[in-house]
Length: 206
Image 1 (tube, rainbow, N blue to C red):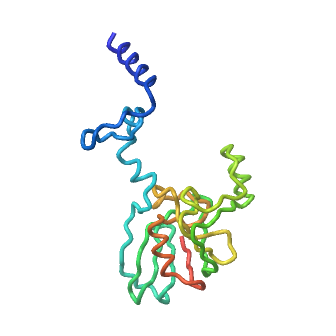
Image 2 (spheres, one colour):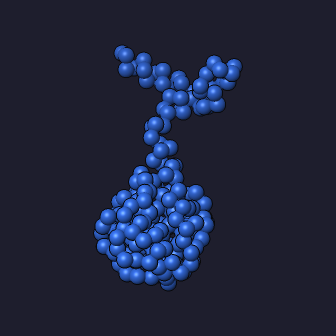
Image 3 (tube, rainbow, N blue to C red):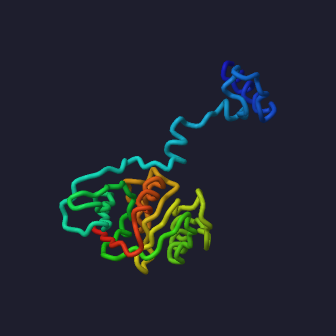
């Protein structure tokens, strides 16, 4: 009987107008919210993990004794870290997302292009693979913006299809989930972007 009453109450609530009538200032914290927003509020972590530009792995200055020229970007896919050598013996370490199994790679190259809020043109091989494996059809082109998978900034590596770029999925930082590109949280990729010039050396290692 109690369950029946609960269902009846919920059904009645859902039939009410979509918005709650505004209350005088200071009387309600729910002003402007729809009834469904009040009855079914999002998780307290929704904004933290779904829309945050912050990385779950905080960037930090670390000792870096390897003999690389100042300015070099060293990407360690096993550690899921990008090291930007800022001076002899020191590097700024950023958390990154890397290629999943079968999509990792290594080599040396340079940054050949930089872009703010880049557009995304998925390679045809990626579009074919996603359609075949997941049944999804990726767009031939997606303009830059907050919903774009490349995030706020991109740094293109040589003439390859790979980039160091931002992401609108910060929860993937520290994981192996990409198709080979190096992902950074938007806040971090903006920070690195401002320090890096065209021609910057990039070393990728497993």
